[in-house]
Structure formats: structure tokens, C-alpha cells
Length: 138
Image (cartoon, rainbow, N blue to C red):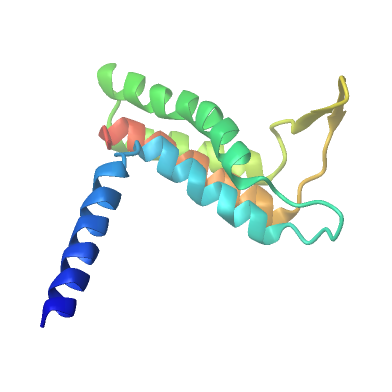
């Protein structure tokens, strides 16, 4: 009986400690994390691997612009149908490759060719983040 009380107390205190350490993440951070993990799953290179935390941090800064733009459109009185049309246009342009994709390595900037799957993932995440901003999701 004494051992089970000790185990219960230990588990309870551990769960309370872990709960206290968790932080509330914004919708932009959650979208960036989700996209980073999806991109890591698409990476089939044997010599390179995606650094998910670093990628998510960079994506957060990138996606924040689309979230803010959605908020601005809502504040400007743009209708939901118009916002959805803008999101669809963003998605379409990214998938069609109309937005440039540049990467910098060792001080040089290169135009990179992304796979169709990665383009679709990025396009969908951008559109979702834009709509989240329009709707004021936290």
C-alpha cells in the first residue's frame, strides 16, 4: 500500500511539473511546426536531414507575414469570400511555381527546384495561415 502511494505521488508530481513547463504556442508556430515535420518526412536524402526546430523557427517568421496580412484584410472590411479567393490564389501561384524559391548557401543565393509535394504542402500551409489570420485564430 505504501509503495503505491509513493508511485502515485511521484507520477502526480511529474505530470504537474511537465504541465507547468508547457507553453501556449500561437497558431502560426503550430502551423510552422506541422509544415516542418511534413517537409522532414519528404526529405529522402541520405546525406542531409532537415533540422526540424530550426526549420520551424524560420517558417514561423515566414508564415507570420501571411497571418498578419489576413488580419489586415479583416480589419479593412474584406469579405470572407474575398479572403478565401485570395487564399486560393496564393495556393495556386505557389503550386504553379509563380513565386520564386531561393535558398542561400555559403553566401550565394540559388534558385531551388522544390518537389510538387513540397510545393503543395507549403501552399496549403500559407493559405491556411492566411485564413487563420483573417479569422483571428490564436
